[in-house]
Image 1 (cartoon, rainbow, N blue to C red):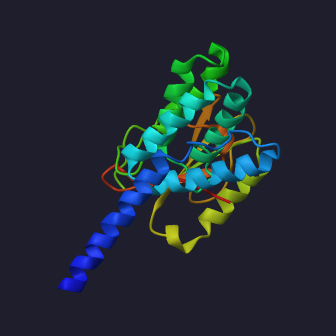
Image 2 (image 1 turned 180 degrees about the vertical axis):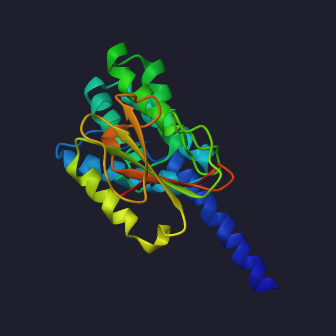
Length: 232
């Protein structure tokens, strides 16, 4: 019992250190080093720590970072690009709606960027709010789901998107699931057996077609079972 108590105290101490560390991450360090790769590596380390830290501490650390960035316009532009890549991109292991939302909130309220420069960030924040795990699936033109469904979002002008159709159709993981292809852009509709095709044209209200091909999985009760996942 004594050893268990000591272990619990050690874990609590380490958790406290992690929280303190992320809140104090940007204190007394240059935002832009002479070798910018050092700054980029430091930011990447911050992003990795932020997604593992308690959310309240991670959000506070982003506020602290932006408070410093407001004093340096050049650094502000550099870091907004890094924040966008870290917390929004599907290629990033740090993709996180809460942290991205906080970053966008500061980008808008700080008013360092022009209004038109803020608009893409706001749009991506909106896209990121759709089809989160555990929430009701949102697909324009397909109001409800009554079977487990694999939803692939693809751009008709993208050759790799068409490859994703073939790849997922032959994947045994989805043998028992319905398959829905949500198609953007212009070009002939795909003709791959086993897929229901939904043509959305240029409508980008829900999906960021620049991320395509991407898929997500909807459970039979209509909730999202798996969030956006790269298809290739």
